[in-house]
Image 1 (tube, one colour):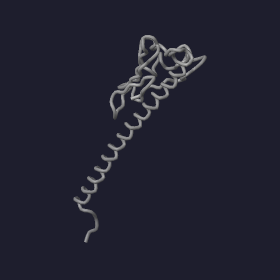
Image 2: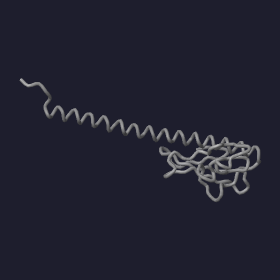
Image 3: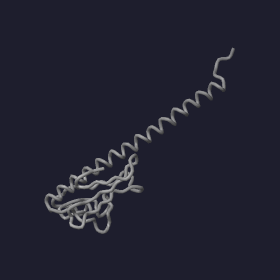
Image 4: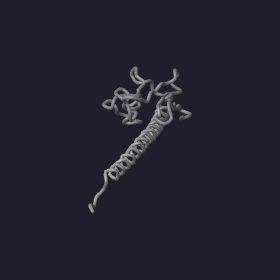
Length: 141
């Protein structure tokens, strides 16, 4: 009598392994999305803190950075006493050395807009598992 596995037994084992690996990849992608969302919420909280420190010193929030509203890129990479600036121009009183950008900057951005009198602002951001959100001085969705 020959010892070994039949073709059917091997195919069943391969199918089970394929199913388990597919389930683990799906679970991993979901965990990655939750991780990016947690980072976004943390980034926005840090931005709000830096903006409040800026407001305490200047009695107004900084103007939008050089014609753009995207945070964490080029002209808005640093927040100092002069407002938004590039990282190379970041000196003096620094409220945030490196302004964070969204973990997926090609598809999502943090956008900033200041009210006309500088007494309020909005930061818009998008969660993968929660849609569009807005942060203001008084609340964070």
